Length: 458
Ligand SMILES: NC(=O)c1ccc[n+]([C@@H]2O[C@H](COP(=O)([O-])OP(=O)(O)OC[C@H]3O[C@@H](n4cnc5c(N)ncnc54)[C@H](O)[C@@H]3O)[C@@H](O)[C@H]2O)c1
Image (cartoon, rainbow, N blue to C red; front, side, top):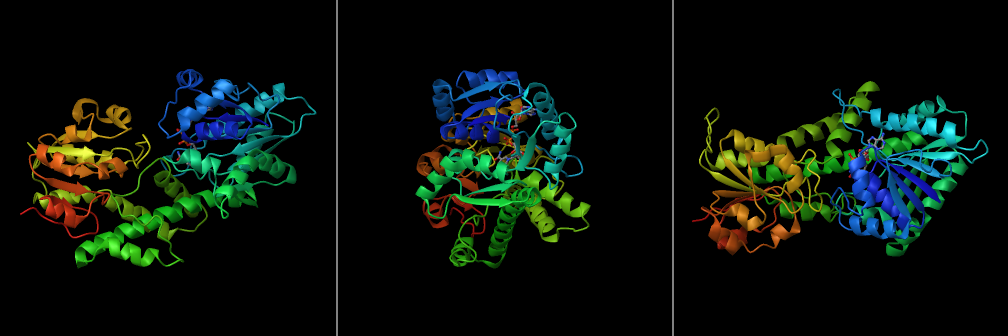
């Protein structure tokens, strides 16, 4: 089948590569010509494990190419996927300007280039969009053309860091459409992925057809549920610290209940990323617009706002910093490991590390940062306000303390003896619980983690 994928970011590139891998002919579109040039040379503008290899393979085979012109391929395309950003507007709602700009352009291109007797073009909203967007996209395209098309909602559930596998072997595909024809096109597009997913896991590759509104809401509801679990476990972790309990035990104790399950129960320094924060705000806005304040979701957002300061609070407590003390960390060198909002990505959107580094700078600290993939992105935020280290150990040279924000597995495997030997003082604030307090105590560290009793060097 022939597929247009509009928007070559985290979602669009994975979808483009994923559809090419399934044997379809793909044109990836982006308004950013520098990005398109890079892509046509086989280079990925983002870090996502496995993506560059897959793109290079399908560029070489001719199954995929990139262009700035949406009209390339519209004449014969079976489907056009809209994968552009839906950032947060000032009032919290999802900003649909990029989605509707695509719809407008699709409408003009269909009017001009598609034969009158062509089968309906399936226009797919893959961006995360509020309930009712399929109707708006339909109206926008219809304003430009009388030719046949149908708008389908197909939210994307991939996770950055494992996006390729998530796309090639989906747990489920959700389709919101109004006709059997639209469903049949979507089924044909996804059939190779569904089969592969079912082979991998008998419970994988499930297909859900529903109306577009339900499909649009499913995506927000999924993210809201996941974020709620994170805020819940973070609050339990904070309570553990206060009452002398251990979140690791509590997590195991509740996660073994099959009604709860073990996933998304890791306490941390608050969630960030390109999706949860904005999607929660968009869902809250949908609730308000419909006279339904989503109270549990409000609490999730508030709890996360509080949690994003958890490492800064721990630093203040440890150094006994009183409010209003000017530059209380002046002269202290703080190493920060992990800048991406989670492991296996270079994405720093809404990452807790940015809040933490700003706090440390405001308190007068010298900050040295390290990440395995996100350094170029973080440099654009802090430029020469902080220092950057090529290796984790370099960040710790002469440091008074080490703070961990991202759960890159390689941090957990590091030789802490070596790290401790280059630091001024062996003090660690671990926002991801990568180490065991008893081991840290035994090797002479002061170790302050989340939801567990701190240990102090003698
Ligand atoms: N990143 C994720 O993990 C993820 C997961 C699921 C869903 N989503 C949703 O998918 C959508 C895209 O997210 P993303 O992270 O890929 O965004 P992104 O910012 O990485 O990519 C968007 C791309 O669209 C391009 N673009 C903007 N307007 C365009 C236009 N008119 N024509 C062609 N290209 C255009 C931009 O240049 C950019 O390259 C969002 O709605 C997001 O909420 C994201």
